[in-house]
Image (cartoon, rainbow, N blue to C red; front, side, top):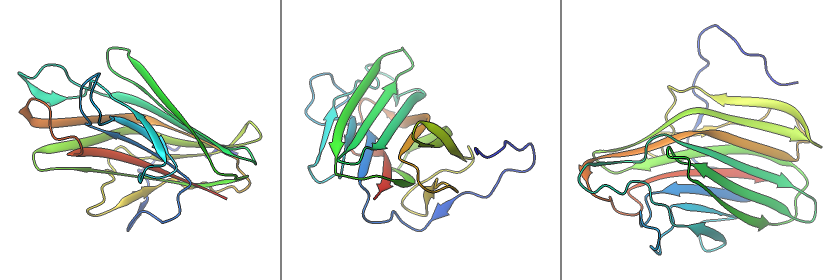
Length: 203
């Protein structure tokens, strides 16, 4: 059963030292080209970041006269182990209501076992998170929900956040939340100066 909500003190941040190797599905949000016709995507999904992925350019902030700010962007990543393949998708909804999705087909798998997230930002830039929740399913039925406290900021310099289930035998996970990328300088930052990455493990 899903974990019951608690009104007591927040649990400790679910940090692990580094991203575990062997993820079967990945997703990322990054500055990219910040242009509708740019060749560096702002939204990426696939099975790794070494070429086995697909992406789309995103216009995060089209006003170069003010400090770069994406606003709070909603994201939803779905990974479903379907036996002969893994269905992977990542969708974002920007503050103005613009929705963008990318889908990818991964390798054979029957069970989804873990989710890990991390982010990084150059000097004078920040990646903020809130309302991050991983909901696990077995044959369409929710079995477990694991939330990231808003005060926990995952980043590869010091920590990675892990949202693993307490149940086994799950074949689907839905990762949702909100993310914001900001810079003190005006104009568009370098494409990879701010990134958020999602790793899903299956077998």
